[in-house]
Length: 297
Image (cartoon, rainbow, N blue to C red):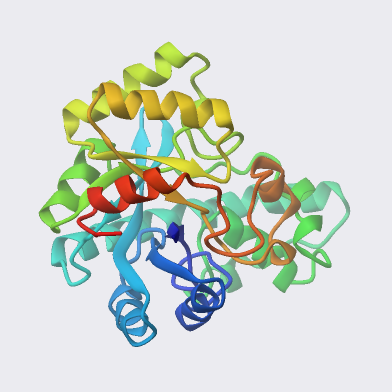
């Protein structure tokens, strides 16, 4: 059975609408999905309903950006209540932080443009509330304002731009997710070059220390079968799940077709799939993943 439990839509930084995601799931025979938009639950109820009409099980989900020390880490929430008021208020605060941070980081982009003899981008236009306030959002703004011809030309002008480290901590995210009726999973814990433990910790002993800390704080599971994880990463995380009695998950981290994504993103995700659900997951692990979420395979 094909599953994919980390998918992003146009409600955050994905390239596909919820309708397109359901259509792709039907075409690729993916039976269970979770749309986990970044700090947004606004599209969840709609895609759950779309799934029902197309015989696709949609697990209500979200991906919460958190700050661990001064680094960003992501936490997945599954089986959440998309109407939960406290969760929505958290995301409203997070959005305000992101807007302020990335408008400030536009100064870094403009400095890079000046050094290359190019015209600066308008902070007034970027601040109009209609743009995406994220690292990919700044890249898209460069293309929109014709500073570059396509997304792959943005990298030289993004040098020095910092990812925001959100004020909400992982332990707080676990509680928000639990209070919304959900389960909290560590998203892509060991992805190479992405937002993961590997960006600031070098040894398996250090990785385990954080996983043990998160388990004590309320973590329910680990995302293991992931496009940016090597076989060695998966084996390590499976051992951690067994040792600390954690559930497991699998997701492609789908943001859209590869042709629409930046070369830098694809470089850190060498096994990025051609379609949602195109991952090699042992059938016994699929059963285990779904059981952990209360679904009978």
